[in-house]
Length: 218
Image 1 (cartoon, rainbow, N blue to C red):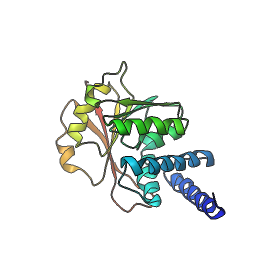
Image 2 (cartoon, rainbow, N blue to C red):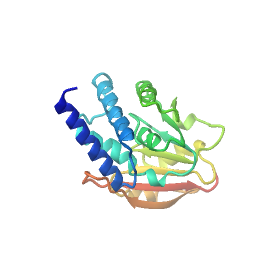
Image 3 (cartoon, helix red, strand yellow):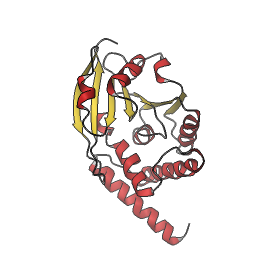
Image 4 (cartoon, helix red, strand yellow):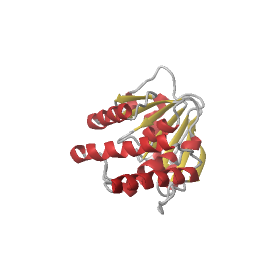
């Protein structure tokens, strides 16, 4: 790596650490470097497998890494499932900053599941398991404490699909763009909405919202 490239990488890392701090996420220099490595791996794999439509580095840092970290404070418990994990967001960044939690990344696409497994190995994430499966067909031995989903499905459909992963007290975190008033109105028992809040992602002017749901009687 040339001196100029190294300076660019150090500048990017400093920016990532500072913007994560605004989200109340304290990144060490080593953790930020591993997140950079995740973008390196995603860029390399996307040349062959088109895992993300975002190809420029700065938008990837904002729309993938920081967007994922924006829900860190709402994750609860020891076990987390990321459904429709795709290229690993929000699951991989959350797993990196929460090594004490166990993450199961679920995706029905074989190429995406292979990338997720590769990225977990490359980042030495021993707390990550990858499941190549349709989420609605999964029946874990124990319910997850938190279920995350980003741009997976409309809220009523998402909640129906993840019900088999949930137990009393499971928290479902659905990441949305604009406030999904119509989707919220369509949510029916046994599900209830316990929180709706805007997400402020540093460097991103677009709307982001987080919907927090719980199931009364799974």
